[in-house]
Every structure is written in C-alpha cells, then in structure tokens.
Length: 269
Image: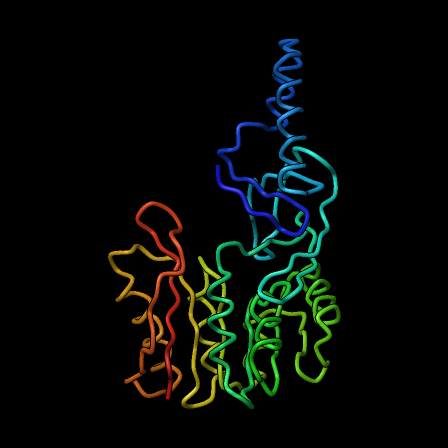
C-alpha cells in the first residue's frame, strides 16, 4: 500500500483494502467480525500516523483538477501541510494535492536568481510559487490558477506563509488568456496531460533568453524527443530562435507502466 500524510490526513491509494463498498457488502452479509476488524485497523492507523482522517483519492477530473475522495475514517478534509519550510492549507475534497513533486518544487526554488520575474502557470494552491517566494529571491511571482477553490487557498497560503503581497500576485483565470499579458524571465508549467496545449501562451510571455520549465507525461522511450520537439515547434511559430538550449530533461516520477512524468528546462532566445 502506498500512502501520503498531508497535514493530519492520511491519503491512501487504490490498493488499500478497505472502502465504503466493503462496508456495504459486509453489512449485507452480516459479517460483523470483519466490520469490527476493519474499524479496529483504521483506528490503529489513525493513532499510528497521528491523523484525524483517512481518505482515498478515487479520481482527479476536469480542467479544474477536482478530486473525488472516499472517507474511510474521520470526516475532516481541510488541513495544513508543512513541506520544506512552506505551509500549504487545502481541502482534499476540493483541491488536488500534487504528490511526489517535493524534490522538484525545491529544485526550482533554488534555481531562482535575484530579481527574476516568474510566471507560475497552473499554480494550484501555490505548490511552486510558495517555495519560490520563501527559498528563492524573485522580484515577483505571478501565480495563475483557474480553479476558484485552489485560488482561494493560494491566497490563504500567501498569507499564512507571511509572504509580502508585492512578491506574489495571485491571478484567477485561464493561463492561455492571462500568461500572454505578462513578461517573465522564467515560466513554470507544472501540469501534465494537456500541458503542450499551453506552450504558445507560455512562450509568448517568456522574455528572450528566459527559461521554460515544461512538464509532460510521455512514453519513456521518446522522452528525449517528443517534449523537446514540441517546445521547438511552438518557439519557431512564435518567431523565436530555433536553436533553443536544453538545460535539463529529467524524470520526476513514474506515471504509469512505460510512461514517465518529465520536466524539460529550456532556455529560449
């Protein structure tokens, strides 16, 4: 079983043996001993991990990346999670928690040079923006988010981390519309599946010589071709130099069998 502790909530994966369906089936079978064992094990997990809720994320859907959850124990869904000195307030029933990207969030934060203007597309609750503001030294971070719930928590996280308002500006809106209005030294595209559809607005807001951090889910066999070709194609369409400089192309994590979540760091002139 894979699990992740988010604040005082334990998130478990689909391999976790218990669910509401189990409870219903056991009730129908009048199998009280099994129900009792399940309840006991869940209570032990609550104590072992010092959490108030155990939940299973069943699905993440739509452009707003809205989660569908199943509560297995407890009923609290809002929490504050601490990661690398950053605080993230969220409600797991309303917004997605981006798991598995902890190292990448800190890597990007440490790359930020003094005086940079950063555009964080698909900012969510501030997964990249908050660590950048705390551990980097940006002149300004523009954090764009489409989901109103995520946007609300993004603003709360700016406040609870005591980040000056002049350092981060949260923008509620579509990245395709909002990004081209801005001018940045660095653009973060920390999203997958349809990220390539937003390369045009990302490059439009990137200054010459700026750096793009482009995320994609891709078959591992073509991870060194497809993402880079997609960046080059849009860069040329936008009148940029075709000789973009690939600074890095790394695997963040396994996504599914044969498919990986990668990030390409590209300097575009």
